[in-house]
Amino acid sequence: MRHKILEGDYLYLATFEPQDAALLTKWFNDHDIKARCFYSISGYATEQVTQEQIERILKNCQVCFAIVRKSDDKLIGRFSTFKSNVSDATAVGGFIGDEEDRGKGYGTEALRLMCDYHFTSSGKNCIIASILSKNIPSIKIAEKVGFKKVGELKEVVNIMDKCFDLSLFQLMKTDFYKKFQSYYKKEENLSSSTRKLLGLESDDGSSK
Ligand SMILES: CC(C)(COP(=O)(O)OP(=O)(O)OC[C@H]1O[C@@H](n2cnc3c(N)ncnc32)[C@H](O)[C@@H]1OP(=O)(O)O)[C@@H](O)C(=O)NCCC(=O)NCCS
Image 1 (spheres, rainbow, N blue to C red):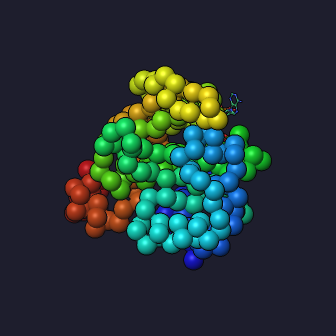
Image 2 (image 1 turned 90 degrees about the vertical axis):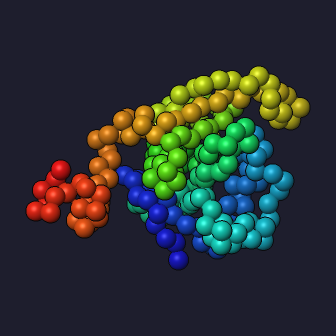
């Protein structure tokens, strides 16, 4: 059974289910997705390999989530956080699988939910993203969520014998919650006893 992790306006982050393997395998073998993720999705997937990957994700509680549309519970993509290969920082990445589901704001919301999940669950104060400099939709969603470009590595990604530039982006926790201040009023989600424990509420129930 799929567990909801975090809910947004149109989407929710959720755990994968074994039956997601077929759709994920299709996306893992999609050349467009592989190229834009600069072939970090390696090799060619079979349904069995994807099935094993889902089992590993669930067993190890990896931060790799199904992106599910609220209106029809359709699996539309996958986003994850992982240790960056350029530093000790946490990186974020993912995709919206089908072309027909892109350009509708889902990528932006999925990235926002992933960042919120990371900042609230890890205690870390920054997250990075490395994006092909030519991948305009991906750069747009990063910027809409508050990522700032901090540099560019020239001709470091090789795709089909051509070299491409890689843009590095960074998002600070304080900037993220400042940007989405009106959206996140997290303390409202806490029970009264936890609010008291954290000093957000007085013993008589009034907010501090
Ligand atoms: C990148 C990706 C996750 C974005 O998801 P999405 O649901 O399409 O994103 P959104 O709809 O929230 O936003 C996309 C933005 O890019 C814009 N865009 C899309 N194609 C564009 C193009 N060719 N030129 C300029 N802007 C473009 C859209 O207009 C939108 O911007 P806007 O809100 O200012 O209008 C999705 O396109 C995808 O999965 N692509 C394939 C894999 C990939 O690139 N993954 C990221 C690897 S780092």
